Length: 232
Image (tube, rainbow, N blue to C red; front, side, top):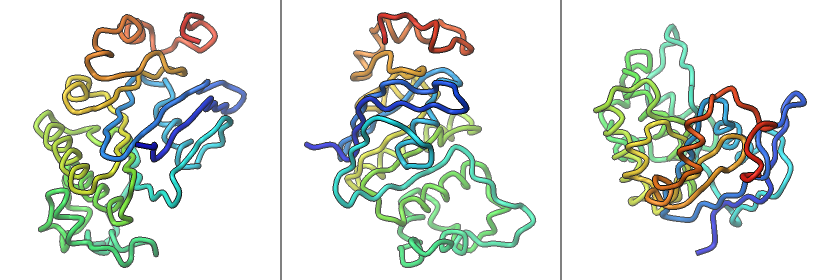
């Protein structure tokens, strides 16, 4: 199956610093691809490059007519602003005609449409943000650490929702995560990223990879200039 999105030689420099170098990946329909790696390894930058909010060099190929739903790592909602969940989801012309009730039902919070955004828990708000991304009817859903700040039951529940959304919509999913034990259970393909792609493959392949073990053994402050040249 041809990929929904694929990169070759993707490189990002910010403020004169090399953040990503020669990154290659592909995400196909009905596939969950998870990006793991230490803090500062360029995971969020990679997602932003894919949606075009960060300048990059190299090739990014998108399927014709590709629609992307993006769930950022942090989305701030002013707690002093009176706004219902339904109104929040209607913001933006692209989403105005979407099925708000259906999107909320998909992520397990169908009863929240009339609730105030300011009254939501962290887990509820993350699900609402995911529903917002689903209103575009995405072929590709991109999530940047969606379970950040949730407790273990909340993390498990959220990843179960991601899996059900993938099955229901037959979409591709690209997700950044630190929850390694869940990644190994839910992902079809894992990319270990720390400035460069150290290794990628199935969860079993990655778990047995020396490169994967070495990446998490390094200090998060290590820079591209001192990475082992065998991985370049």
